[in-house]
Image (tube, rainbow, N blue to C red; front, top):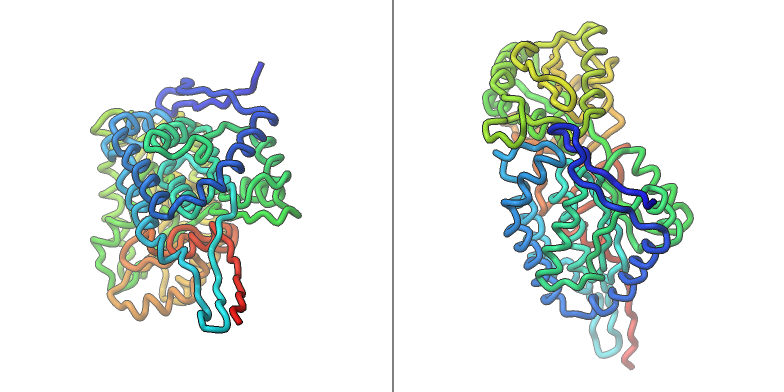
Amino acid sequence: MSKTVKCISPIDGSVYAERPVLDAKAASAAVERARKAQLEWAARPLSERIALVLAGVAKVGEMNDLIVPELAHQMGRPVRYGGEFRGFNERAAYMAEIAEGSLAPLVIEDSDVFKRLIKRVPHGVVLVVAPWNYPYMTAINTVAPALIAGNTVILKHASQTLMVGERMAEAFHAAGIPADVFQNVFLDHQTTSDLIAAKSFGFVNFTGSVAGGQAMERAAAGTFTGVGTELGGKDPGYVMEDADLDLAVETLIDGAMFNSGQCCCGIERIYVVESLFDSFVEKAVAIVNGYKLGNPLDPETTLGPMAHVRFADEVRAQTREAVAAGAKALIDPALFPNDRDAYLMPQILVNVDHSMRVMREESFGPVVGIMKVKDDAEAVALMNDSEFGLTASLWTRDFARAERIGDQIETGTIFTNRCDYLDPALCWTGCKNTGRGGGLSVIGYQNLTRPKSYHIKKA
């Protein structure tokens, strides 16, 4: 009997989808088809590759009415939010727009004597291992520029969102991208590691847990295969005394709770200057009290279940431990009587400190701790007191001050007066245990290609 991968729907715990995984022989054959297809794909004009990728993206948009309820079933996001196509399209369109300039040769000299230049050439076959929390947007971050740059792509999606890769393959193939140029595959962890160790790929991009990223790097050890990772996060917000308080509360709490807190750059801890602390907390509680936790297929639902019961149970454990250690939970459980299984009520905690896991470890759920700070120095020290470094959100009307503080924070992105957003013109990157590498922007193209130098003597 062949092994399968299952998607357990968080709505009711049923098996929503199940697919057989490829065995080692079939997986190697998929890689070989991708390798053979790559040279012809790279030889096509850049404009043709761009047009085909954008056509594939448009085809995904045409499926949105099917995709939105599928996402609700697979990972729990409420249908009222309409899926991910806006961001999916924005990211692909921007990478298409900058492709010609980003991939253009760097000409050092073109004289009567010498022509010297550096070209960007594709790695070959790129493996994209995508996560379930924003399954379309995170995948397109690498899929679109990898294909545009002349690579072929093999996509392995998370089991929780195993239908996403199928939809993307259906759309891309319908748009004219050859089947061997973009392949969606179902692989188990061991086969994935074995393929990487066998030098099957020119580049591997992984978005997921720290443990998953470590497994990717171990598999690639000694192969000289490039590995780009975006792993855990514990992203902070800092509200200064001159902040627009209402906007800060509204944005940061949404950043903490949207998608049931399952956002790569979601806000997981908030530091508020003493003079604004009480008002901030009062306003935050009022917002959260207005949420409706329920079935994501109900258009009235604002907070759906977490993607899996075990994820919800981990957040419950962190919250329970914090309260036992002295934290105060401000959201009344009576407002959310359906808090059970994958359905997790939102929670705001005060009287927290960094001895508590909820302020130190990734929660990835609808809980946020809020701490009072006396000044910038204390806020910076607390923001940096983390093993992770993806984003930080600063709230002030003094932009020079925000930049000075941002220069001191160990993170990949600094937001000022916003949060939880990915700008495709800027490099999406992290530091510390959040991983290494960079996606999107011109840097994304640099990571998905390698430099190749030409030194031509004319006379």
